[in-house]
Image (cartoon, rainbow, N blue to C red; front, side):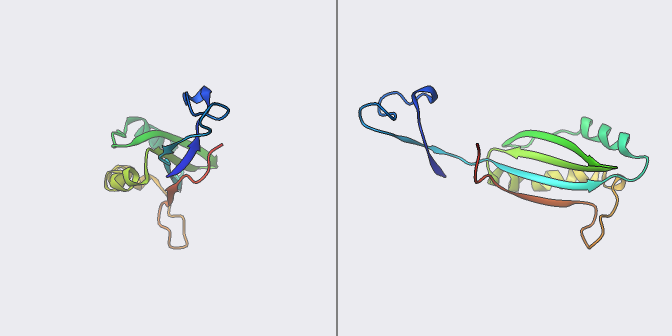
Length: 126
């Protein structure tokens, strides 16, 4: 966790910068993201989109999901989480969800299999 300066506009009140008592900080929990790259087999894009529309993302700490088309049959899933611990705890459920449409994905080669996942905590937000 890092200290984030508070300002009157952010609800700091007394002790905020420029007020008696000087700057104060509050604890800020860093969010986490997972990003998964994959490529859809020819003719299966609509099936994949429908599978994602129907899938449940009822994971503790899950904030937001985006499916991004990055090229010809190439996609990236981006998930935002309230903490890295929440993301880690949800991995078994995410793998179970992936198994429902794994047959729609092409092997990426290079020993990756059908997905190329990365995840981590946010270290900077602007």
